[in-house]
Length: 206
Length: 208
Image (cartoon, rainbow over all chains, first blue to last red; front, side):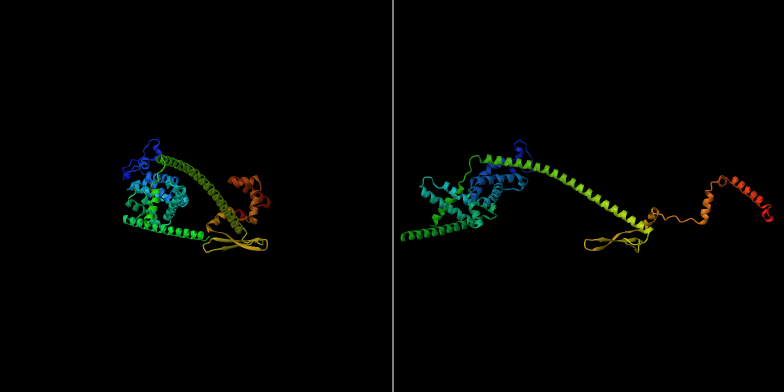
């Protein structure tokens, strides 16, 4: 992981004219940061927002913040963790307005295999939507740990740095999150099975 | 059963994990950041200019308000001072006014004159006597007011009137005698001769 001190400095507004502006001892090349970290930042934002356009906007907002607070670059030790934390917070803030559960059906429809029959695809998509809804109902820390673990580039230590937890704490959160998620999905399946049995019984009586 | 749920969870998480942005994400992000940065700079510039204009307007308005207030206060103070002078002069000339608006005058320990002007204000339903103290004046101001408002001339005594008649008799000899001692002596001599001529030989005691 490259420390920010090792990165060249260039302020965006002057970048077009080729002028370089010194910002103390540190140097910031936003173009290089975008090239290197925009992908992981996009996936972090997407894990929360579950919408491509919203995730891209969150990444843009994050880099705008980076430019605005470029004087704090000296204090930054781990650039990727710093950027992930920025986009994470922005995505959480954006989620309050976006309501990603409204887009889950469209997302699930794209994830189901295309070669399946239409009725099976519909059922599979609905089951994926149920998983996303169950994730949203998890406890806050468990949900956040689970969603950050989705991003493969992030280590347990980096997830802990973003969430303010130790590595062991993150592992415990991940374990509990998965257990609780399985229990919820199991209960949901049981309820649905009972409802289907009841409907089938009513149909048989008729 | 547990494995089946695990598979569902993994399938859902894989959907999030495999998300890839559309091609050209970096260019779009860079372009957006650059345009926002430039817009912010220009907005800051416009905001600074607007702030300077408004601050100038506010400063001008403040100066105008200050000038108006200062003018009003100066005018009020001048009127009060004029009123106080008039009251003091009236008191010096006419200590007590008879009838009309009563003026109460009291002298406090330090010699200052404290006046209270009682004004009757007739309202719509009743009259309200409003006691208004104008000001306290220092004793040092009294000589100035005496010079501004001197006492009337005293009437002339009988002797003064006679002297005035003599002084303004327009007799050339009298006038010359007042200016020239020789002429005055000649005139005295002439008067003595006329007296001797009128009364005859002078008495013995007169010659001595």
